Length: 129
Image (cartoon, rainbow, N blue to C red; front, side, top):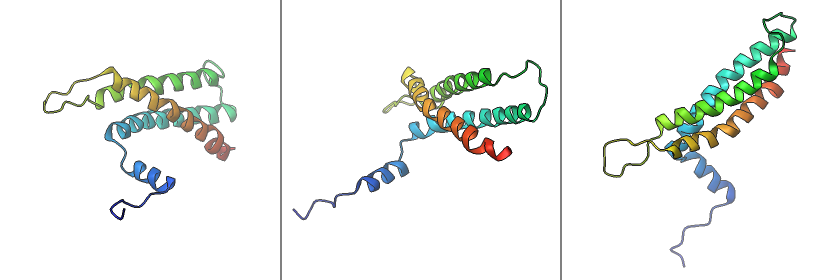
């Protein structure tokens, strides 16, 4: 049995999967990540302004801002992924869209929205005092 390749460790397998991720997955995560980072920066600016005593119209709407952040990241992640991840066509040249692409974007957006918000609020926000 010398013809078998050597067994890889769990870490080696995961590292290889990370380096060779399928393009649709990379696009879905990138779409959600770009929207989430942009909105998190806007939320941080709003939160810092409120904590420093700025009087903004509408008062303290941080709960509404976080709710809108999550909704916008989930919807935009789904829509952008739907637009940039075509269904495999085989030998055809016409790109077809599928609701599965939107579902992929949604399920990629859920952890991205959570992780970016946690990083923004728990890691970056304390740096501003």
